[in-house]
Image (cartoon, rainbow, N blue to C red):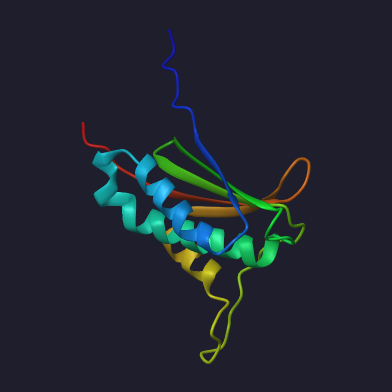
Length: 137
């Protein structure tokens, strides 16, 4: 009989700045204890950057729009997908040294083993990033 995979963790948060902390906490709590020392900090930073970008650039109405997160393990990675209702495609920016913002995806690129932007089937955009992990056995 095949091994049944874990059900992905799934959350929806209002498109409000307070949701960044809530999302980071939810993702951290769902990570297995044994992997928290290895992945916790980087996964928390990925979560913060992606949720912040989704709120700033992908949501239109703070009181109505939702940001969706899905976290799941597959192929030696923990994958995080952050989705928003926006139609824009996030792109890697190269801000100058005086810019106060615009570095979120640079951080994602430096932390993630792999990342991409995908349109959602019905409405919106997802940014998916993966962190590799090694579980002792």
